[in-house]
Length: 142
Image (cartoon, rainbow, N blue to C red; front, top):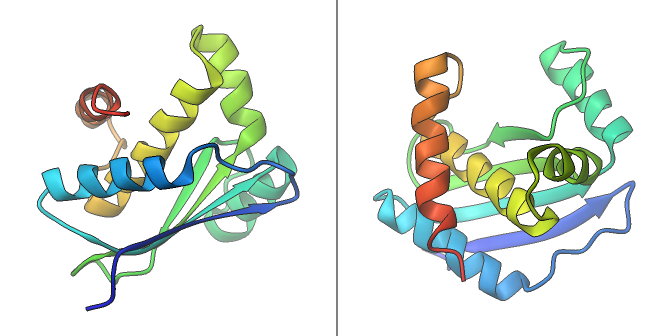
C-alpha cells in the first residue's frame, strides 16, 4: 500500500498552512490512535463564498460553515477524502470563541478526520462526544 498522503491546497484564498509536515504527522497519529490509517486526504482551504457554494450544491444547505468533509473511501478501509475548510469561518470562530486562529484551525482539521473515521455531530450527545475527542487530540498537537 502506498504511503499515507495528506495534501494541502487553497481555492479562492491565498492561505497556506504553517508547518505542513508537523501537522501531517499529528493527523496521522490521530488516525493511528483511532485504529485506522490515512490513505489520502486533501485539505482544501477556501473562502466563505467558495464553501457556501459547495454547501448549496452538494448538501442543499444555504448557510456558511467552517468545514465540509467528503468521504471518498466508500466507508471502509484506510481514510480517503477531501476536507474543505473556510479560512474566513475559522478566523471568525477563533475570535468568537476567544482562541487563536491556529488552535481553531487545528480543531477544524481534526474534526474533519473524525468525520472520515465515522464520528458524527448530528445530535447534542454526539456533538459532545466529538468535542471531547477533538480536545483530547488537540492536547497532543506539537
